[in-house]
Image (cartoon, rainbow, N blue to C red; front, side):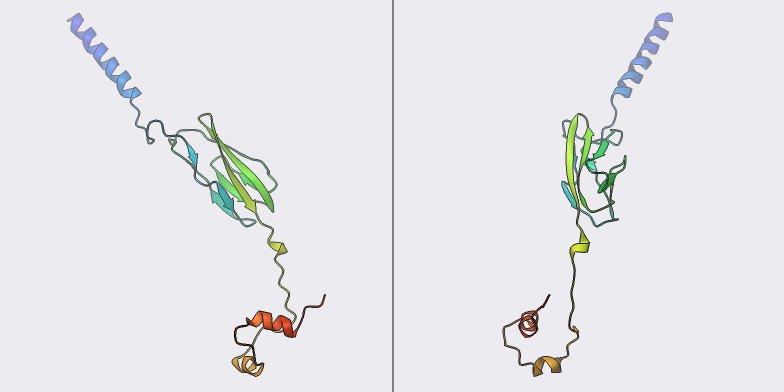
Length: 148
């Protein structure tokens, strides 16, 4: 009887150990982690989430930014464009380092200068006798050159 109890106890302990070692993995064996985006362009104030692929949900990923004044990154990989500039986001997990280049373009450089009214009707276009294959903007520059 003692032998039977001891054997059943050992079998139960072994079964618990074996079942504990066989954790279900979401990732195929030997798959190397990769980052979801290698380059990102964001407008100032916008956000985006970057993920690391081929890792389980329990794997810890460490996120860093090279320029915290242009782009910030959270612990979960959410990036936010704070100011104009560029930064490199670095994700480190399983002794592998992955990077993503983020640029925030300066939209204040896009200046539109309108000196003349832009509303034109069909009658005014026909009365101007436009050359046939010349675009309207080119014709307008020839008739009204820009003076600085």
